Length: 188
Image 1 (tube, helix red, strand yellow):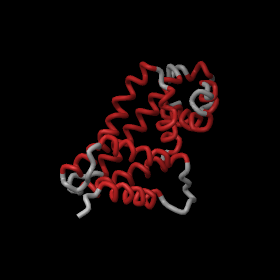
Image 2: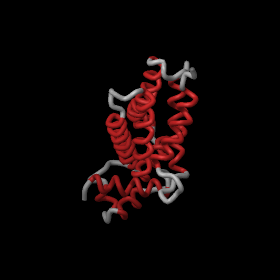
Image 3: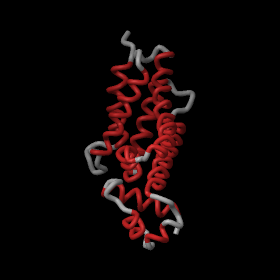
C-alpha cells in the first residue's frame, strides 16, 4: 500500500463527506486496510490533510511557474496563470476541493505549517499585479487586494464548474482575465 494511494482515497472522501465527517475508518476501508494498519502509513487525519494541502500547493506553484515565463507581458502572464490555475482546479477536483474548502480544519500547529505555503501562492499572483503596475500596464493601489479578489473568483469555480458545461476552463479563464484586465488597464 502506498502513501499516494492513501492520500488519493482521503482526498475523495474529504471531498465527498467533508473533513470532519470523514473518519480514519473510511479511509482505511477505501484502500482495503484495517484501521490499525493505516496508522503504519500515516499518523493522523491531520497529517493526511496537511499532506494533501501541501501537495495541492506544490502542484499549483509548479503549474503557475511553468505558465508565467519572463518574456510575457504582465497581462499575458495573468491570462496564462489564470488558465493554468483553473485547469489545475478542474483536473484535480478532489485535491482542489480539499485545498479550498477544508484548510480551515487544520489544527493550529498544522495551520502554522500551511499558511506560509499558501501565502507563497498568493504572492505569485500579487507579483503579477505589481509587475503590471510597475510596467504601467495596470492601475491599482492595492495589488494585494486585487490578487485576493482574483483568487476568490477563481477558487469559487470549484462549486459550479462542470466539465460538460457550455464553457471550457480556458474559455472561463479568458472571460475572467478580460474582466480583471478591463478593470486594471490604464485607459489611454
